[in-house]
Length: 321
Ligand code: FO1
Image 1 (cartoon, rainbow, N blue to C red):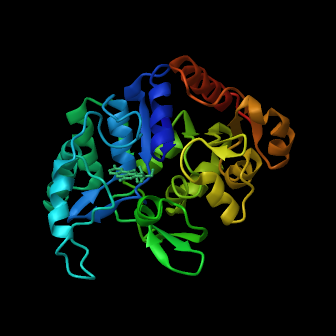
Image 2 (image 1 turned 90 degrees about the vertical axis):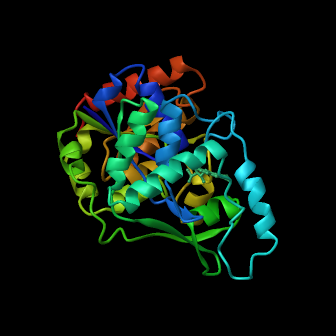
């Protein structure tokens, strides 16, 4: 069994690539829920939904989130109420776009959670509904919320930072509210200890992989088996393939490069897969404590994705110190 630590878009693409090489039912995706939010009273889990929709080949390829062939009638209808909403009311938030078909997922998840189902139970039902055979498990059934402290001190939710502010403001600190008391989803400690290998998908090390690591026991479990933990760098040539990872790393004092990623992951993973464009940094990655493996990391074709997955699996079985 292969365990994969997942954020959203990059992880979804990597799981798709991995599925060309490994039986999907033998893969467990441990997915970040720090991005989750409640809007319109609906429980929304963006990274889980991005992974499910991508693996179901239903994702909108341009946006990388939400469903293809969407309509936005509910959001359009909401505008009428935005016009009369009293100041200070959080009703009718129109900055977070929810497609009409995407709403069905939030309706279902919200109703099931309200009946007492756990997020991992509901996620398994949603996977079944979409025919996704990878086991996708939220990192925790408890609420963990990524809080972004902006330069100047204001705290905003991750989605307010990422979508409402278009991540266009400098970040001072990132914290994970609830991570100190949240439990790793039951069974995931066994998954992380017994997996043949653990892969860290090319997701944002701070806000996608960080929340998973913030849960009690995760770094200890991975550190104890780091020789078979392999990370794929989400930074190529000093820039993030998607989202604000490079700028966030800079603003939080990390080097926005494969070396900066290596410094973050060295305690929990022995190998970092880097793109040839960063091959000149291989020695610096080694000096940061990770064994560099150079292979094309931009999954622009299924073949490149499959070869990236194979390289990661080979490195994981090479048993490094
Ligand atoms: N991202 C945006 O940039 N704008 C949006 O309006 C937006 C809506 C949205 C709705 C559902 C969903 O599952 C994801 C959505 N995202 C949107 C992406 C989301 O903010 C990101 O996927 C993550 O949270 C970061 O990986």
